[in-house]
Length: 321
Image (cartoon, rainbow, N blue to C red):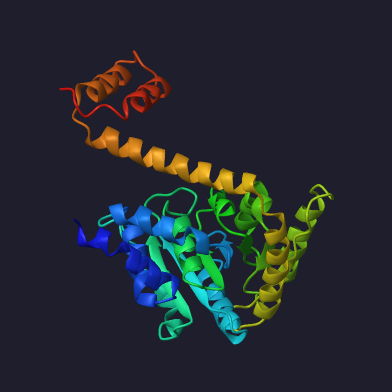
């Protein structure tokens, strides 16, 4: 028997007790999609629901990592333990995380109350890797009070965070017209809290007013979304952000329902199916896949028809040609 699999119950028990080394090992197993991963995830299921998952998103250059760094410090002042899932861009060569976010959070490295893990985005268009939700669950089971998700900042597509985070914080910077347009186009719809960072710069007040005006155009029956100003470098306004997150989290925990959990699970399942299909198509040497590819090249099949054929054959293609 694989020693990793046989040691899984002990590893899960150590993780639930909050041991950082066990948490790190479990994350590696889950991210690598090893046989032991499913056993670990099954073992921690009864221990989930303690942590508040806070997602930070927004276009590149708005100071997400710096703001997250100061937010961590504020949480530690309040006696909260923290887990951070920092989703970095993937290396085009190795596929691994670039680790830029972890470098910016280096001041917390020796703090046992903070556990930071960088994950590679691996091409995830929404800014989150497929394993991010599972890593957040592992941190929750390990007893972290707050789990922070920081995405790579890809702009309008970055709504996947809404499927995972309890509280969604969308960050902007003063005077960034394209930034505000991106928020108006899509991200605004997922925001629980809007933050204008770098508030010491000109046009900060104008940007806040723009965002409030956009919110004013929305359905007034929907939840209110606070617009906050922060200066992460000078560490101002972060206490207000922490207060706002706590307020939203209290409401979220009350409104959570089974349909929302099912929606998240469907989304993660769809990601897994897409990944499995991609691997099958790119690595398969079977006659069926070759015939589908040729049919598309010769315009006898459309891409959608070819995709349906791949899915129909995905489970039983390993035996021909």
